[in-house]
Image (cartoon, rainbow, N blue to C red; front, side):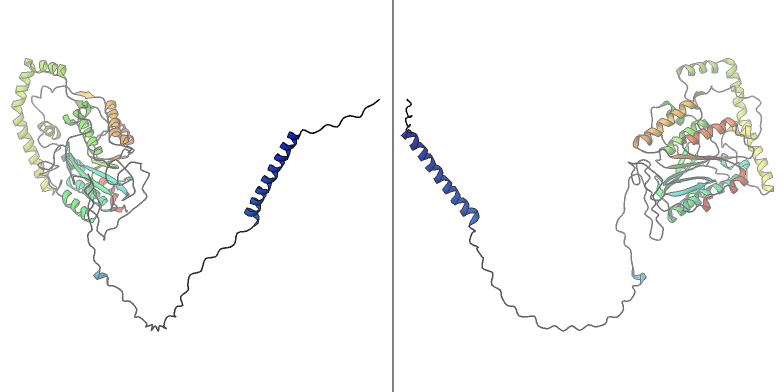
Length: 460
């Protein structure tokens, strides 16, 4: 017999918990719903600000304008315009003379250049102000800072080279070139007589009409009188000091000896120390990089002292010294004889290559010694390859290491018509100018130097 299951009763406590929980949730839902409806559905009442009061303005009174026709303005007379100097610009190491308004002032783009250059000082900085085409006896370049070095030695005015007339051509060539430079181009002129030098100005100066006239006046007296050739007796001419490597043997040798190779090295370095773009040498002697004569060392001096102290040497030297006054008299008489003959033909007096050189004068006039000199101390030399290396170091110090570029060096070599110039000397000169990115030209005699002129037709 199957019995029906008994009906289970719910726990009264569980029922109360469920009722309470349901009531709490119902109340929470009602509150949250009321907040949502109030916040997002019922809009806020609009609020308006009261506009500002508007004041009524009276219209402005009528204005009557009378327009009168004006007379045409009169042109201002140029005579009433005046210029006033507002200031001077002082730049270190440059003697600046500003051009006046009647002179042209050229600003060009220049040729290349380098960074780090200064406006008028420092290393070779190409900024294009006053860039000029330059042509001297057919050698051409383009530069802003130019140095002309002119040999004034009496050898430049010997008969074989055309005398004083040829030198006048040289002076005209340089002064004409300066006259044709752009106004902003900086330049200087150096006269040299062996190692004696004289500068036109202490520093580079800008080209212009006034400075050109000063140059003409300054250079005109040089080699215009046969009795006062070169820089002889000119108090302003003196041997300058080289400053780049005072302790270097080669610089000391270049300053020490009167050998012509030493003088070339000396003048080259002194010109490079002027801080320029282009250098023109017009000279009667140049063999490029040569060996240069150095001072003898202690051992060499002792060896020579033993030679000169010998009895044979002393006897010949004594006899030779007695003959020197006689030779000087022979030179004087022979020169007087030749000048008298020249005067009768309307020719100027003869200029000898050396002023007081009794030995060179006797040789030039072909006069013979009865007792020749017993001999001089042997020469001791620095090899030309070492000289070339030395100048590479000079260029690095003065230009390259400062971000600059070495100037071009150009050489016009003025020789007599029959003067010897060996192939080796020519090769050495070619090597010299190539190392400085320059050119050279050999001119012989009066006729050739006249026909070689080129500066007068060079325009900037």
